[in-house]
Image 1 (cartoon, rainbow, N blue to C red):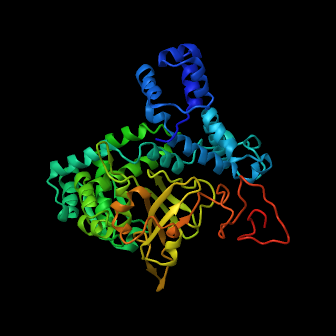
Image 2: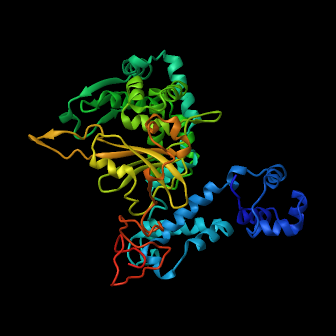
Amino acid sequence: MKALRIGGKLRRLRQERRLSQAQMAAELAISPSYLNLIESNQRPVTVTVLLKLAEKFQVDLAALGGDGDERLQTDLMEALSDPLFEAADVKASDVRELVMQLPAMGRAFVALYNSYRRGGAGDAGLGDDPDAENLPTAIPSEEVTEFIQRRRNHFPELEEAAEQLWLENGLALFTLQQDLVKVLSTRFAVDVEIAPAEAMQGLLRYYNPLTRRLQLSELLPLASRTFQLAHQIAFLGYRKEIDQAVSGGKSSSPEADALAASALANYFAAAVMAPYDRFLEAARSTRYEINTLQHRFGLSFEQVCHRLTTLQRPGNEGIPFHLIRVDIAGNISKRFSLSGIHIARFGAACPRWNVYDAFATPGMLRVQVSRMPDGGAFFCIARTLTPAGRAVVRGGLPQRAGTLAIGLGTSINHARDIVYGDGLNLDDPQIVTPIGVSCRTCPRNDCSDRAMPALAQRLMIDENKRGYSTYSVGS
């Protein structure tokens, strides 16, 4: 167990309970001077004190853990990497101190910076915008991502609903698509039609609630057709469960609620196509071999990867994975992390992640052992994919397919449990790729891929020297 310093959180808890240091120290059976050392982060908290906190003050010990602090620290460093703050000369040590002492202030700063970014770039602040009060308080996609992250991408109510659908309708894995068509017909009086691409006018799925007809584009592969059938059943039969889960997210706009509902319908669809216990057992028995899982459950590569991130049922968890989806320009369209790795939220991400290398070898699975500046080591796989329905030809000329890449990874501690780690000497430092979150937050000076100077270090240009990049310190 690493030394845990919770000074700011403990002081805030004491102040919220209107207790003096002497009073809280008596409750915890420690001396006031020792409590003062803990609150000032001069001493880490012990297991005994943590257990006393849980007993006396009904504190959620997980909330006192370091994961939230590390995530807040990364968010702050990303925000402060904006050139707007360059003159402030903020160091990484300053950020760590703020997170330890005043975490609420840190979260408020990140929220304020997010609001600034939504209000417009440049030197103009929100106060200069007459329409600022009408701006949304958050980007819907970011709200939904954070909501799913808080829930650890696991929704037991939707897992139970999917299992209920299987039991009530006698579904079978190898006839699942026909079974779901039958459910839509008999239970919801919905007709399903596979429609020509030209008739769909750019849509892949269209449900008309008046005619109760569900149209699926012929461009959808079989796995995607099954997924869309289950997605529609989610809204028709389990809207109550979805709405209850969405309401727990406390989003700031109807748009975010609608996006969250769609994401949870997708979650339900994945749970129907890959029932929890059966899928987890198969993942363990195949040692997370994606190709076999694709064929056994009729899933796409992305569907398998995404489903693997949801296997967090208490007492029967799978490996904690992170997942990232990017396009060739580096835009991140999907991100989630249970592995502990930090994924960029603002600006460009680190180009050394193998999810970006995947574009150089389309269709080939890439394997990477990587290490973050803080010492965290990860085992990651990545591969390109073409989203369903994008590879089309019109007017005799092929259109650009819009290739994406999926990265799936976990802590290096789980690499032996994954088939893709076989044959690798995980103790060999030469196979480790040093990575970071982004150039502005990464302190590595010897990186030839550095595209901009690091926030935490002063840029010194010497006309007589040239380092690995223009922005190497001392170059």
